[in-house]
Length: 236
View 1 (cartoon, rainbow, N blue to C red):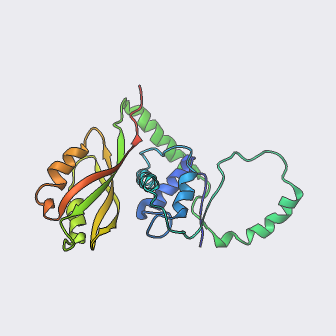
View 2 (cartoon, rainbow, N blue to C red):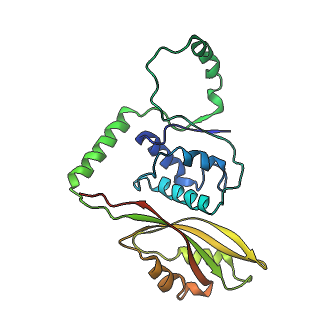
View 3 (tube, one colour):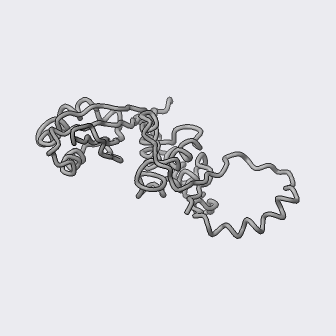
């Protein structure tokens, strides 16, 4: 069944997509596909970091595209146009075809309905709260893709990933991951993470945590594959 999304460049559309990605790493399935590419291409700009799940997904797909990692065919996805509809009278042919289109409504999953009055009021209250807080500067964030290599083909990759994700610090959020064959039966772990630039140094994270005890029982080395800014501090 195809998944249907509304305008992802609107606040209502972004909110619903962020909720949809809360429990998902990809738009459909368990690996990046053309469905992810379709939704990714519909963004006019990188999403705000306040939509945590979208920012995680967007940065992951952006990194995969740089590595030419999107290969799956996907299950089919539709993205409605973000163009403002014309105020002109619809054609007679379009009007006549409307009842027939209603018959297909049950075939799609409408994730994004119209924004309710309660949602509008809640959004206005959040905006007012942010403005009233007087916050002048927000730290930038970055999305980082890491290659984590084991010692040999006998290394337990499940425990390796558990050891990596056990590293916790303020401003660090681990994201999606996958195992990539290297050769001779050895696989490496590719894992995404989102960091707050002012709180997390990637070099320090690798040297003092990922390549230090106890994680280095499983990790032989760790390299940065992609490093992308996903949020910049506003100028005041």
